Length: 102
Image 1 (spheres, one colour):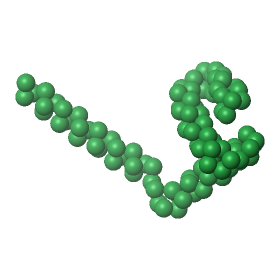
Image 2: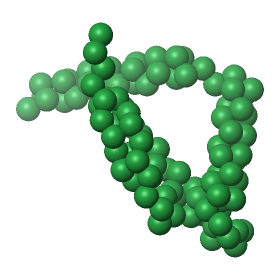
Image 3: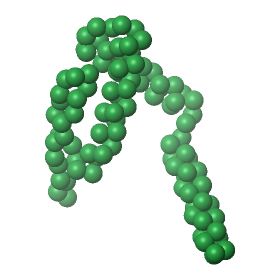
Image 4: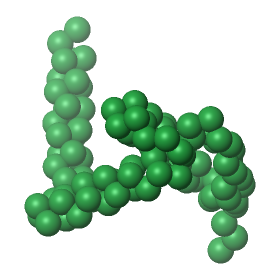
């Protein structure tokens, strides 16, 4: 299977980066960049930390801690996705019923 790859360029705290990624992952990576930029900016502004590297390490540490907390808390992403799908199906059904009224 041939996976189509491309590169994307983005900026974090004023520094430009370029990474290679699969074409289908591009949108998700750009969302992650926006999320990380907000986190890094918050850390910089709240703590008055100077230096992109230190800010990046603090952001990575905070995100790793949050991820571990979620795993320890028993969050099951598969179960969550199933619940979201069920809710979406109920919404779709309600919308069909609503459209039939008019």
